[in-house]
Image 1 (cartoon, one colour):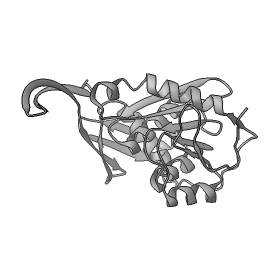
Image 2 (spheres, helix red, strand yellow):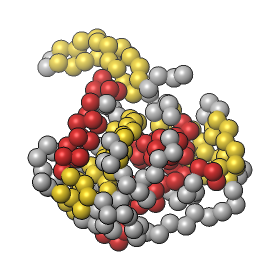
Image 3 (cartoon, helix red, strand yellow):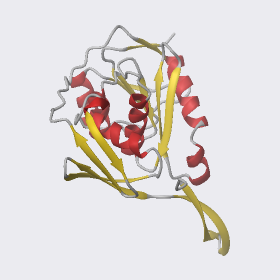
Length: 236
């Protein structure tokens, strides 16, 4: 198994001095996704959780809605070959969710857990992180990757591999809330998306159109509530 990070010898410039030092950096791998005989996607990603990455991508791109739509999967060093059932995923962009209330304390807990589990980022400063949390059970999944899209796909894949539903979950990420990231969560059926950073205009527009609750710039005490959709935020 290839480790997500490695150590190199590098020159550190300190003031007017050059010092030879060890530096820990992130590894980057490449994976081609072949679906029903056609190359459909190339991932530049952190090695590890390859099956979860592919599964999450298929879900978040609305290629499939359930893992059982995958007839066969073969993973080699740099290629993932899939056979999919001949069905087209249908996604309602205005997901309706059961009455679910998220407390600000839930977001604080997620933020704490996300920071505590960013081990590779702490040693390299080169990773994004994501966490999915189910408030009614306390169950959570987290992962890291060099790519913010990959991080979201991996954590979505983890949830589906463990037979959990995303309909009553929150996703939190360290990446920007662009239209592509927001669309992934809408396609996966996630009702609440949170980030440590900001949203773009198109990301906010998709959240409003899909009634997804979108939160950005989360700190211990405040955040931007870009859109409050089906799921409401309780500040008490």
